[in-house]
Structure formats: structure tokens, C-alpha cells
Image (cartoon, rainbow, N blue to C red):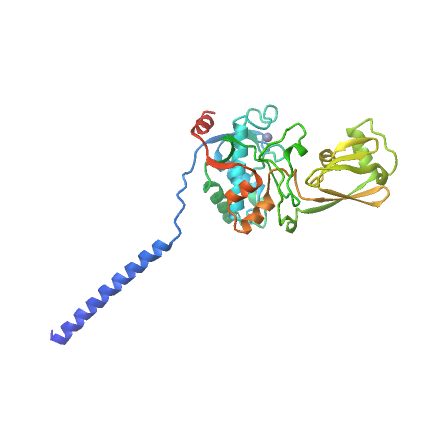
Length: 341
Ligand SMILES: [Zn+2]
């Protein structure tokens, strides 16, 4: 090999070494820039669930159950931080019932902690039913997003003064949430379930609903519920709002000779909320426009999504709707109790 050739080979080797060293550095930088995978400890505990669909009591992993609750209670299209807030609220809700602090389980659950009836506890669906509920959805993608929200907040619950709270929630507040004692008169004030303003909810389909009720329908329902009621004339004379709550919800309505709570009127006619406007389209026809969806207490799901869209995280969202609460991991005492069932 002549000297020129030798020099060329040495040059090539040097170039190769430089190339290898640079590419190694680049790969390392790429790795350093990758978002750190969240090191979340997945918390293991069981909960006993009464499945009202097949009337079977099942022992389930708590977070696995919460995934089914979030899937049934909040659209997967909502922001991740709203889904996380929902996961923590749902977990706390279930825990409060498992510990026997809230809810009535005696006759409805046959010994289980929670049931899958949304009108009694929280809605819940297994993945097999998800496609039937949301035919246009991408089940795998949505389910994975919900799992991320649940397992990413595993073990986290809401407390007030160290006690597990009763985190009530609803679909749409109509612009303002409600004090709990205005909805359940048997309940006294709860410091973390106070009325707060909630912006941006009018953009959702659940915000405004209209229902037309004829005088006949109203009289029939009312006589069934209050046999001593006396009607004095057409509904335009017989139905009037007597009092509103601070959040503009109907507190009391006079119907004929009696007065009933707005919440009872909502229940009788399956209305979306108690933020109601009455319009008599005829002297014996009442058109009710409602704003919001649900009882209005605690976290508004649409409101939570709005805050998340504005860049707020789950901690901000939960503390916004539940005044004065803390978000913390379940205590050892609670874990022991849960695992002893
Ligand atoms: Zn129940």
C-alpha cells in the first residue's frame, strides 16, 4: 500500500468514527427530549358492584370499575384533564359508598357497595357494550384514553378536612351550580358543595331543552301525586313560580291550591333541570325551557371540559367545583379497609 492509500484509509476510518460518535450523541439527545413516562403507582383494591343489568354482584378491581364509570359518565372526546377530574370524582364517590359514609345501599344493592344504575349510584359500562352505546366511536382509542385518565390518577381521592367527600356531579350546570341543601332539603349545608359560576356551557347540546306540557297532562300527574290538589283554572292561571334559589333555579311552584318544590316538578315531568322558564303558548298549554342538565350540585362535566380547554388541570377543575377540598392518595387505613371486604 502506498502512502497515499494509507492516508486515505486512515481518513475514512476517522470519518467513520466521527459519524458514529455524532449519531450516538443525536440518539441520546432524542431520548432525553422524549416526554418522561409518568411513573404512577397503580393502586390495587377491590370494590363490590351490583350490576343492575344482569342482577349479578361482582367483585371488581377498583380502577377497572372506574374505567367503566368514566366511559359511561363522560364522553371520551372530552379533554384529558376533564376525564382525570371525572376519574377522581368517580373513585371518591365509590369509595364514600364502600366505606358506608354516603348513599343508601341496604335495599338497592343486596350487600354490594355500589350499583350500576345511574339514577342511584354511577353509570357503568363494560367495554363490550361501549360500541353499542356509541356506535360512531373508536372503541379502542377511546377506551385507552379513559384508561390513561384512570390509571394516571390511580389511588387519588378528594378529601375535606381529611374526610372522604361526597363528590356529586352532573352533566351541565346551565351556567351556575347549586348549593346542595336547595336540592335535597333533608341535607344541611355542605361546605364543599356550594354554588359556583360555570362558564361556556351553552355550547353543549345538553344546555337548553324545551318541553311542551298540556293542562291535561299537568293535572293528571299532579292529582296522582297530590290527591287533595284543587285546580282553579287553566294552567296559565294555575301554574306560577313562587320562589327562586340564589342560582336562578325554581325553588317553589304554586300549582292550583298547593305549592311544591321545583325539584319535585322536575321529577314529575322528567325535566332536564330546575333552571326553568315558563311560557304559556295557549291558556292551557305550558312550554318549559330548561337550562342545564342534572341536579346542578358539585362538578359540572361540561364546565370541567371548558376549564380543561382553557388549559386548567384536573386539580384546578376539582378545586373549582368542590370548594376547599384536597386531592390526596388514599390513606393506609382506607386501603386496609377496602382490601378486607
Ligand atoms: Zn346504587
